[in-house]
Image 1: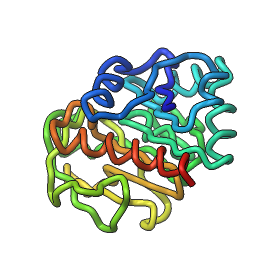
Image 2: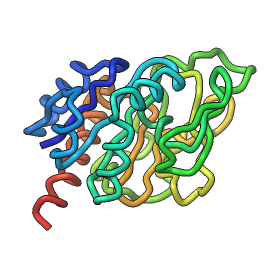
Image 3: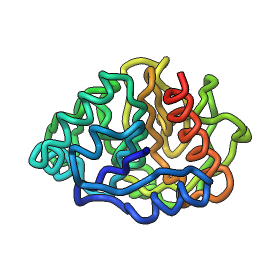
Length: 207
């Protein structure tokens, strides 16, 4: 089972339908911490403000569950704001602590480009990752964001995109993954990423 976390901020049905189109079974949306605790994989979507998202995760007890399950080896995929929440801190509307699963900070995109970054852009892959298995080099994905995660370690960057500055558009640390773009809105290559995440989860189940 793969739980898409409903914490009040996300295009939940869109993400669920994306997994369905990608042929990944056992995916469900839930606000229930116990169902997330029982899941074999966790997806953290999100659209909106970092501060509000973290407040909702704290209020519902979901933050504790997500961190606990990741520590137990459960694969996690953060999408858009969900990827930013993986970091240590965000400077969006002040300073706000993140989940701390991938050390790094969230910063606003530079002032010399139109913000938010909205539309299709390519991703280059500085290193191989099972999340991008079968994804063609320089494939384009759909972005909508004003902030980006800057990981402390280049080893955690598995995708990079240029928009005013080069930024990390995909990250991975052990079994924690994040993509800044929306794979569920990114046609064939986006669905392939969701299918790859499904294989990561099911591979862990079989091991």
